Image 1 (cartoon, rainbow, N blue to C red):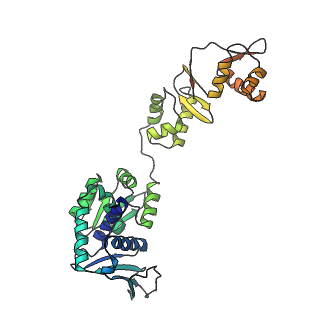
Image 2 (image 1 turned 60 degrees about the horizontal axis):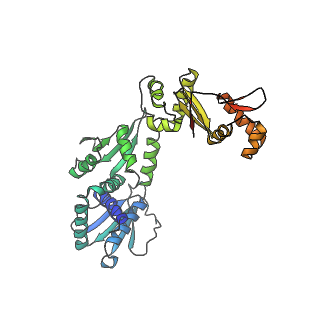
Image 3 (image 1 turned 60 degrees about the vertical axis):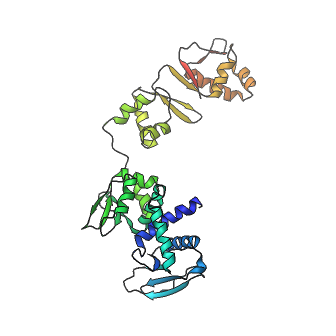
Length: 341
């Protein structure tokens, strides 16, 4: 079977377990007010079974019997009034004992495939999950259930998600950023469009993890004996690049670190015996096997003399070259190691 179709089936197993007629012995049904989920379920069922062997029906309920436009010509569509419906919802239905039997067999097989748990949980969350946003930056992932269920526990435990379940609240409650990280890694909230948008908005609003006072100021110097960029450090320390840059500038003011700018990128190091230069500057040093004028160097490198003069001035600031009494450039003696990037 096509792996993509298998993953899709896993999502539909989750959807059906969440909002399908799991107790029925004669029909497959799936209820939801999000049409893309109904569409996914319908198309997946039609890939699994031969559509000509059964009749598909979609019932649409709304407060006033609204005629919702849906792009199907292969099923019976009926409209009903439901006074308490805040928005239209759909019921997809296939009445077939034999198809239901085959479908339940597929569901049981999927629940025994660990590699499909990601897709089953994604589908279940699309059906019964919700993202709660409260005061004081409270952010909680919840899964609505009347009672604790073995297969839900099994899915959550597989991903090491820490949760609580209280019968009076009728919810699995999942908090703590480490759990949000797992949801983000496996895209567990991404199947339902609105839940996906809310999840990522709140996930991206998490403040960076707290560190003890001066943690970064003490930690960064340990990491940059070998030169690193602020981007590399941000990745290592799991902080924003802006925050890392702020600390590096502070350390530079205290003369605890040096930075070298190469091709518009700053490289930072605590190694005082190191100088970092670009490959272009290295060419100038290579050509200075004997003293030369700016013009001579510009001709050898086929660049304008002003460009050569600028590069040589930068090398002079690094104390790698100097202009002698003859107005010619020469290399200076240095014990520092030159790192070419």
